[in-house]
Image 1 (cartoon, rainbow, N blue to C red):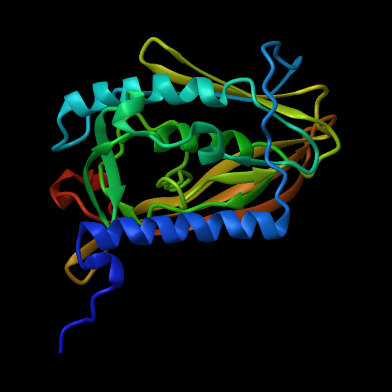
Image 2: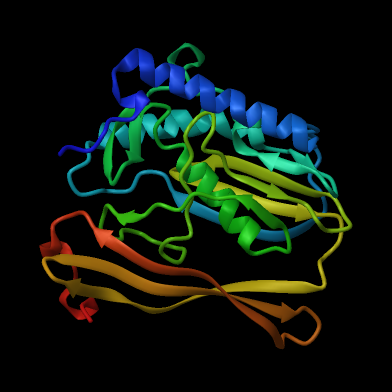
Length: 274
């Protein structure tokens, strides 16, 4: 007996109705919880850089047309100013979609690479997850509290120009699959994001340094075979360091990766197979 279809799978109209339903449910939840979203933006940068990072926009991905990567650059160029300069005061929540808004063709967004359901396809606004990934990486290197995060469940592409531990990204899908963090500290923080050449750049800033620093470590990275499938495995830890002494005062497991490899296993480096 076949698996019963969900309402959203009965065609485009049902799919759009389901999206509207989820968006309404999200708005009602935020209203009931009285979520205080960050809305204030300022041109002047706060003086202290808590963490900075840059990631390449144009990454050669096996089987992916580079034209989609060029479109991603355009999409990021539209979305970055919506986030740049945003100040998140104590108690406030940062919401990616509350600031960026709908990534539609009418607003200038182009067809880019989109990931969902263990595969990749093209969609208007594709590639914006790179901006959400950058913000999440900055947040992981701070005492801010992640409120909403949706991990990619599969390894869709071989590593290429990777600068951060595997698995520390996040999925987003307008309007209800969001990325959010809350400022539970005693000072305002600010995000600065911009494009520079072929890189997406970002900084998390504050008025004064936090008492702790943070460091991500990926351990046990490799590929294991289970039956006919290969999996990308590793553990990502976040270490907490005393700023004055450099001593590690805390360590927590952020992510235990066990991601099915969805590309040709022949592309896995032999020395990385466990």
